[in-house]
Length: 250
Image (cartoon, rainbow, N blue to C red; front, top):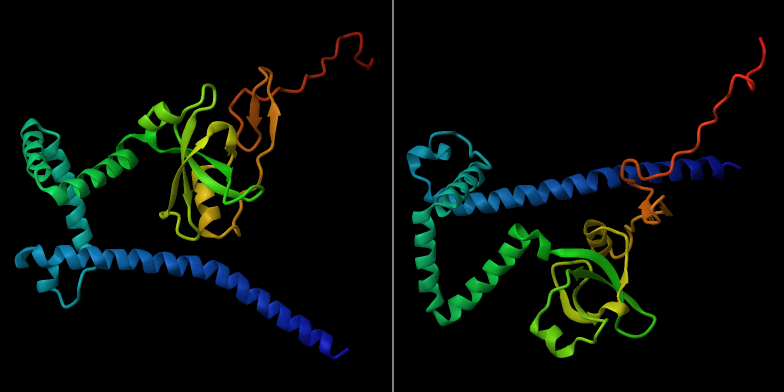
């Protein structure tokens, strides 16, 4: 009997510690990553700031984030300048020079296309999360499905009514690395989870899985997501109307 209170007290302390760890660990890791990124940018930008404009030269302490602010302002000014006619001409001339360098032109062209796809052209980003049978039958892997695009691969390998689709299979726990595969559309099982939910599932190695979304058929026969239904799509229950003859006499 004497061991029961002690056991319950230890269990409560353990639960309190785990609850505090769950709260503090993400905050600490996020703060560490943000602080490391700010310090990395400052270490690159601050050495090129003139001494009279750098507050670190006349203050008794370093100002964290000043280099990041300067970098953001410079990038914005460069973007504003590049949007003008003169700026576009200079950028075009610089790209022509880079295009004549055998090794540099490949790296620059690939990086530019990646950044333009991710930041500018939203229609070419991953659209949906799916499952494909890999590496063998009845073993399913999570993939990010890109939009349907007609490429040379489709011209050579497409089957009528079942085109190939480009999918990216990320690795756990780092979703930035993985494999690019082309799979028949009929062999992809599309999921309702968002890209962000799929990324969290990959990073957590399956520990943080989104709840399944319940769907019902609306008046037009289309499936409606009960988690976030569009306004006016769910059928409203009929209101009971009472006529004068059905009302009780007072």
